[in-house]
Length: 131
Image (cartoon, rainbow, N blue to C red; front, side):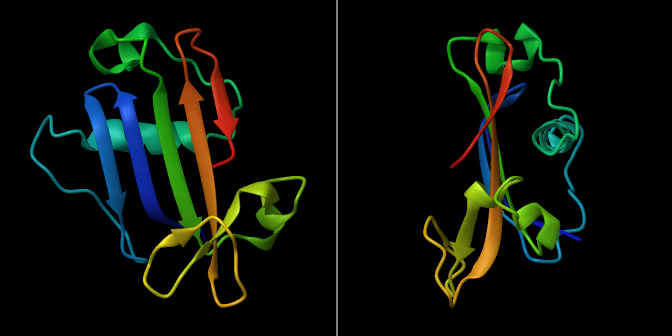
């Protein structure tokens, strides 16, 4: 099963910017009420959605500002081989070096990491982009 290694969220609901690297054994989010836990889980759900047409509203933009796009990016480790095929997500495969940094060019000594980015502009049409 794939594991979330890094998550970046910009301009989504109550989150202006969020960036977090997780341990390889990420299990749960903890925080007080209204701290953004559900928003983070919704962002993960949108970017990894099996549906290529999730619905977004103006209210999903941080402070309702549709001039700044929503950007949700997730990098996954332990990727199933069927997702690494070029016709699926192969173009998004990057490398995780021994310092824990993601590199755009995959080297032999790197661990494979899959980065998926979702962007939503004022037209409310979701687009999945390569990094």
